[in-house]
Image 1 (cartoon, one colour):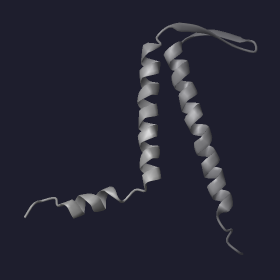
Image 2 (cartoon, rainbow, N blue to C red; image 1 turned 135 degrees about the vertical axis):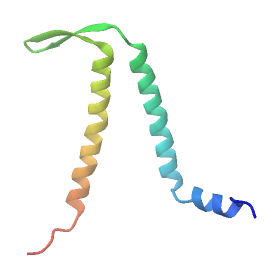
Image 3 (cartoon, rainbow, N blue to C red; image 1 turned 60 degrees about the vertical axis):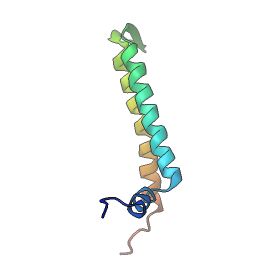
Length: 90
């Protein structure tokens, strides 16, 4: 008897909906492209915020920007989910 038959493989693949699988694949591809883009940009740039002035590696600024760009939608989803939960009655 084979260890994996067609039915067990199809059942495992059907666990995630197509939309979620495509979302995961797109997110993974975006992550790979972001890492590549950060890795090839190794120069130094001048950062100027109001009165603060400094030089910083470009890869560090790109990584911080990518993390903030990922955190803001995640925070929005978290807040949205908390607002949709029913409040316990006292």
